[in-house]
Image (cartoon, rainbow, N blue to C red; front, side, top):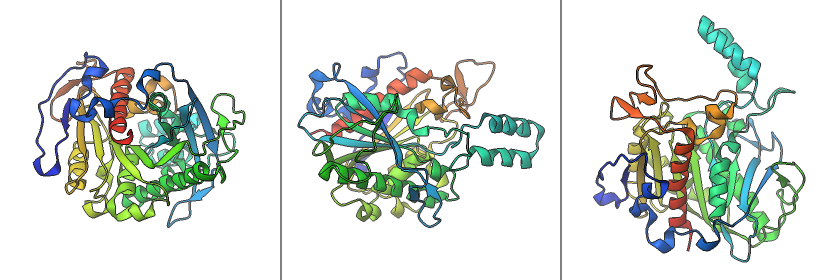
Length: 395
């Protein structure tokens, strides 16, 4: 692994180690883990036996609007939490996916593939509109991009966190791009946090009575009052979601956080900074610890993600972690985007050479790289993300 955990004024490149066969525990850099106390789960002895509940809430496909355009955005999420909330307020972690298709229209997917092969770009665009519409056409299921992090939500919940994975299909289907896209994602995070602040404080608001069992769909009553530590919030954004969480935590935008909410750690996972501006003042973070993770087989985001994050935190007095995972691509961090999930538009984004099976071609920094399996990539990613949030959100 390559990582950088030093203060901004003295950052240096640490040695690279290739240890793909090593257990996940050994892959965690000690500088990220910090002291044993800060690295441990909220109550480590109970972790393996801790039950996890999975809920959903959905306030409607048009419950919110994209700032500036008024285009519809849903307020919907999947929640993982320890079944036993006990008396200790739990830190809240918000997960946000990136840009991906919004509607699971298999006929449109087939039409798009055929149009691409034939070079019929009008037909290609027409099929793409069906895959990126919002709300989806009657009879067409939505693509649950937020469910792609269920594995991560369960792991974090076992560590004692309450985890909210937000759906942002409306933003993906909207016309906003660049900084406006990052701003819209930040606005959506803040809207969810405001709802959770109201729920955790008074037990009231739009979320009261809105929870359903993620498997059966049956209503579930959970009393979150005084069980959520909103002074200790973590955010993780993947792909364009990574730009969104950076924008949301930036010094210039802290005044947009809901009253009673404080963000204490930001994780940018394979962040798509390449579609954003070079104006660091819009993304500059000096008061909140930040980590950036990039795989060397990422076929969608290049190494500029690492340098952008470093520049955005150059004036920081908080922690900064720059992590490279050898063999990780972009899509495998989200199960909905991965081939094994069988979902529309899923795929392996890494480049490949038929003469070198099991390796990705032209990754950052070298000609070929052994590629991780979906399971291995998610196990390693979850280990880093968990260690980061345990260090900065546990007390």
